Every structure is written in structure tokens, then in C-alpha cells.
Length: 345
Ligand code: HEM
Ligand code: HEM
Image (cartoon, rainbow, N blue to C red; front, top):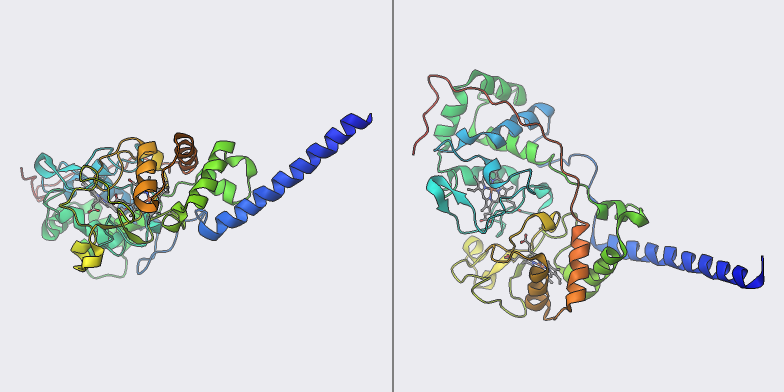
């Protein structure tokens, strides 16, 4: 080999070594903040997960008869074909009423420290009892739900198989536990997980640059862990409060949970997995463009103005959090019987 090409080769090998070393350094730094998604269904508190419970939970998740009208199921507002949410500004529920908040995704929700934008439910089983009774969502009562489920022999059998040692397996609590078991299976491994697990090629150059910005600018201070968020509570508008078009004054966030002045306009940092699929953004659902949402975050939470290019790179990184969707076959639900309570208007 002539000298010049040999030097060029040595230089490119050295550059390759350097870039591999810096990729490893970046990964080590990233692993201080983020955790890859586990490859198996995680354990949840006080609710051993079994196949029977998962299957029952899936049927319940899809069953509109959990709502008083027989129209709304969990799936109505958490559509698993469109990112686990409803892609509306705020959800539409019982009697076509519009609720006050945007529907978050149920995908990977098991990893959130607590559920809802204000964290008012400790876990998924506590959460599931909320919408069924909420007047603007499913408007039902626990008694009517139990009467509905008990009226169908197939459901009774599924509850008995799922809660074998219990005297009264068909209960509102067990319904919530079965739904939690199903939701715990809704995991979406993403290119970012492959990258964290050592695959240098899983993210594009722009996505890597976006990850660096996400860490350097300080987004990670609030969006970290397995779900890149969903772990802590912060004022929306820590540095600069957004206008009431984005942060409506009537919803004071965690204040309603803790009754503490310090918690006014405090919300859980949004979990960012699959964020590219779940527009519109924020609890108010007022922002449809992810790049705009990123720029609002930078200004309101960090007092930073991002250039269009920087925001674009962060959006590219966030695209690397779009995961592989769980394969779900639609369940066949038991048919009503003569004793099944009829839908109300
Ligand atoms: C929040 C599941 C029914 C709209 C949530 C969350 C979960 C969930 C896990 C919290 C996610 C998070 O905090 O990141 C369920 C289940 C349902 C159900 C299992 C059936 C039993 C519905 C229905 C609607 C709806 C029918 C629409 C009418 C919403 C909204 C929120 C939410 C707007 C956010 C509320 C807030 O933060 O105050 N749901 N959901 N959900 N869901 Fe549902
Ligand atoms: C929500 C990204 C910095 C706290 C969000 C959302 C995005 C995002 C896309 C919307 C989630 C959704 O609609 O589902 C970013 C980026 C950041 C950043 C790219 C850096 C430029 C921060 C920081 C904090 C924070 C530093 C804490 C001080 C929150 C909170 C929410 C949120 C509390 C929920 C807001 C609401 O009530 O709607 N973030 N974030 N974020 N983030 Fe950030």
C-alpha cells in the first residue's frame, strides 16, 4: 500500500475507534438517566399476574358494557391502534360530554410512578376504578358493573379462573386487578432501548444529536427513567408560565390532590414513550405539533430558546421512542343474558 492511502486508512480506523469510544461514553451517560424497557411483563404490587387475569383484563378493557350507556369502553379513549390514546384535545365520554383533560397513553403506563396527569391514583388497579364511575367518562356504578358481569356465565367462569381462591371472585376490585394485569403487558420496545442495550446503529445521527441535546439542555432533569418521564411532579411553567391558551387557569393540577399551594399548576412530567403518536400534547391537549411542544417545554421549564434545528433534533430523538406495538387479537366478549342490566341513555 502506498503511504497516503495507508495514512488515510489509519486515520479512519482511529476515527472509528474514537467514535466507538464516544458512543460508549454517551451510552454510559444516558444509562445514568434512562433505563431500557424490560423484556418481560413487570411484577405489580398485590396482584400476581397470570395468563387468566391478562385474558380477562383484555376482555374488560374492550367491553363497552362497563359503561352505563353501553357505548364507552377503555378502548374508546385508549385506542391501541393509535398509540393508546384518542388523539383528541380532550376526551369525549358519557352523553357526548367533553372531559377536562387529554387522554394519556396506556402503553407502558405500568412504569409511571402514579397514574393521571396529577398522579392521583397510586397504580393501575386504583386508576381503573376512576373512569368507570366518572360522570363524563363511563358514568357507571360498581354495583351495576358487578351485576352486568355476574349476569354472563362466561365472565363468571373467567373471574373464577383468575381469582381461584376467592369466595366472591366477581367484584369491582378484581375487575380492576384484571385490567391492571392486561395493561402491564402493553409494552413497546423502541429503537432507543436497542441503542441503550448496545446497538450503535439503532438510532440515526440526528436522533443521537437530539439525545445529546435532551441531556445537555436539561430535559432529563424531569424526563428520565424507563418511561422518560412519569416519575415526578413539577410546576408547568417552572421558569415561565405558558399562556392560558395552553395552561387553562381552571385546572390547577396536583393542587386538587394535595390541597397545598405549592402544588398549584404542578403536573406529572409526561412519560415520553410513543410521544410522536399521541398528539395533541399537554394535559390541555392544546398543542398538535411536537416541535412546538418541545419549544414550549424549553421555554417554560428551562428558560431556553431552542433553534428550529435543535428542536428538530430533539423531535428526531423522541421519534426513537416510538416502539413496536404489542400484537393484540380482539377478544370475543360474552353475550348478554336476560338478567344483564340494560344500557341507560
Ligand atoms: C387516564 C386507563 C377509560 C380518558 C388514564 C390512565 C390510564 C387509563 C392507565 C392514566 C395514564 C397516565 O397517567 O399516564 C383507562 C382504563 C379505562 C379507561 C383501564 C377503562 C376502565 C377511559 C375512558 C375515557 C378515558 C372511557 C374517555 C371518556 C382518560 C383521560 C385520562 C385518562 C382523559 C386523564 C385524566 C386525568 O389525568 O385526570 N386512563 N381508562 N379513559 N383516561 Fe382512561
Ligand atoms: C410534558 C418534552 C423539559 C416537566 C412534556 C411533553 C413533552 C415534553 C413533549 C408533553 C407530554 C404529553 O403531552 O404527553 C420536554 C422536552 C424538554 C422538557 C423536550 C426539554 C427541552 C422539562 C423539564 C421539566 C418538564 C425540565 C421539569 C422542570 C414536564 C411536565 C409536563 C411535561 C410537568 C406535563 C405538562 C402538562 O401538564 O401538560 N414535556 N420536556 N419538562 N414536561 Fe417536559
